[in-house]
Length: 428
Image (cartoon, rainbow, N blue to C red; front, side, top):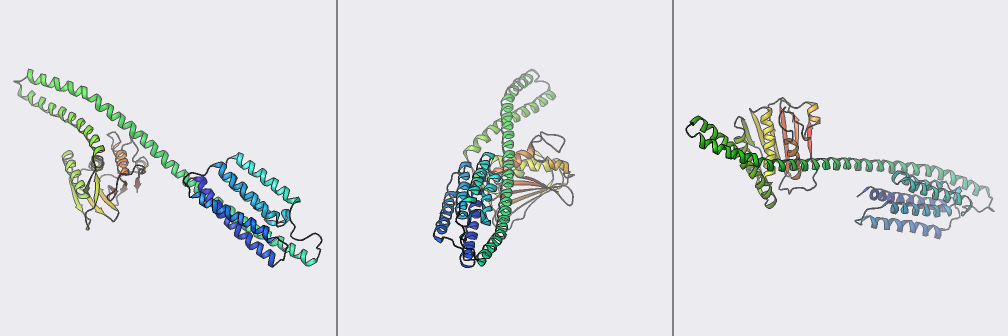
C-alpha cells in the first residue's frame, strides 16, 4: 500500500469517528436539549457519509494506487458533507463548525501546496456561507428563557466535545502520518542502498568478464614461450623443472577461467537441492585444498532430520569466502558448527583473530573495503549479496572470548529471492 492509499484508509477511520460522534450529538440534541432538527435531512446526510465510506473501502481493495487528484476529491466530498451537517444544525453558531478544518489539516499534511490552497479556499467559502445561511436550532421567535439556556448549554457542550474530538483526530492522524512517512523513508533508503549495490555488482561483473577475456591472450603467449623454452633447453634438468611448474600454473589459470565461464552457464541451467551437511562437507573439502595451513574442528549440532538447501557454485563460493576470512584472521583452532531450527540453517565460524574494531564495523560489507591489509575488499560484499539471494544473511560478532564469530542464517529449502534485501549486520 502506497502513501496516499494509507492516508485514504486513515481518512475512512476519521469519517467513521465523525459519523459516530455526530450521531451521538444528534440524539443528545433531539432528546435532551429538545432542539428542532429535521431528522430526515440529517439521516440522508448520514447515509451519504456511510455510503461514501463504504465505497472508499471497496476502492481501496483495488490494485491501482490512489492519485493526488482522487485524494483531493475525497477531501472536497468531506467538506461538502460536513457543511451539510453544519447547515442543518445552526451553521456558524454550531460549535462543530471547526470540523471544516479536518480536511484542510489532512490536505496540508499529505498533498502539494496547490491542493492545500484549493481546500483552504473551499473551506473558507463554506464557513462564510454558513454564517448567513443555515437552519437555526432554536427559532428566532422563540424567546423562552429555558430554550435560550438550553441553546447556551448546547453551544458550551458542543465546544468542549469539538475540542476533544479535534485534538484526538489531529493527534492520531499526524502521528500515523509521521509513522507512514518514516516507514516510506526507511524503505526508500533500503531500495536506494540495494540499487547502489546492484550497480556495484554489475560493475564488478563487467570488470571480471573483461579481465577474464583479456587474460586469455597473455596466457596463450606464456604457453607458447614455455613450450619453446622447454624445447630449447632439454638438457637443463633444473630449468626444465622450473618450466614445468610455470606450465602447471599457467594451465591452472586457464582452467580457472574456463571453470568460471562453465559455472555461470551451469548456474542458469540447473538447480540442485542437497542436505546442509553435504553442502558444508563440499565447501570444507575445497577449503582444505586451498588453505592447507588452516586447522579447524567441525561439529554438527542439529538433532533432527538434516534439512535441505539449494546448492549452487555461488553459495559454495560464499561459504569459502567466510572460511578464508576466518583463516586470514588466524589460521589455527578455527571452530565450525552447523545447526538448524524449524525455519533456518545456522552456520557459526569462530576464529581466534583480533576481532573487529568499531571503525571497521561501520564499513563492513561495503565493496572495495578490506580489514586485512590486502586483497580487493569485495569478498564479504559478494558473500552477503549471494546469501541474500537465498533468503539468508551473515552477521559478525566480536566474541566474548576473543576473535570473531561469523554467523550465517539460511532459510530451509528456500528458493532464491529476487528482491531480498542484503542483510549484513555487525554486533559488538
